[in-house]
Image 1: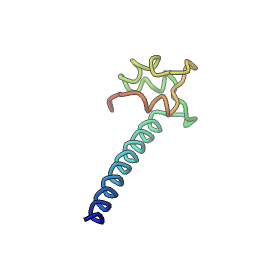
Image 2: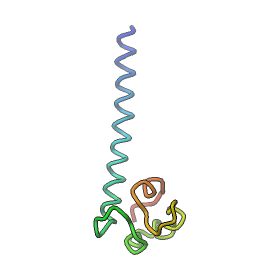
Image 3: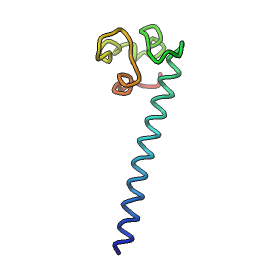
Length: 81
């Protein structure tokens, strides 16, 4: 019985980790698609390709440097438009 519980717990944990990885990969892919110059930072001009992102750019720019990095981008909720 304990073996079955351990196997089930391990499967659930792996599923949770896989879901997070898939989400992170999708987030990185979306960021890379917007980062036209590939410098790892989104400018307001690059963000303009997504209406939701452009509208919330300043709110997402936590350090107020005029760019969004992958961490700031990952905190934002925007549609794929």
